[in-house]
Image (cartoon, rainbow, N blue to C red; front, side, top):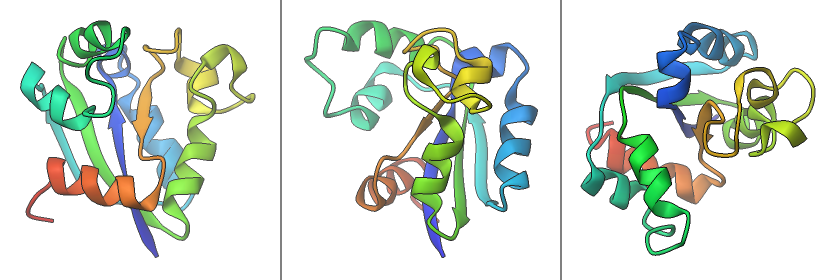
Length: 134
């Protein structure tokens, strides 16, 4: 049993897609361990995306991620990181496999519905940042 971290991004929350995203994860046998609706500020975005700060694309990513409510969640299950990434699909919705969340709901590389940890180590760091008491 492992854990991973997911963000249902502001575009998906604004479009009313949170329920469909959560249903996809639950139907795949993943368990929601923690979940919170919140809006983050620029400083928090900088902490979460620390490895991207200073890159050319980061200012627009920061603006987007702070633009409205998002849902942060911790999911658990067997091989959670890999399973969630498979359910999400490729970062670019145009390249995502049929039926994945990003293929179904994403519109651009940035407005692609969800963020998910890319490795167990990343999940541990992100969970500690977003849910320090967990």
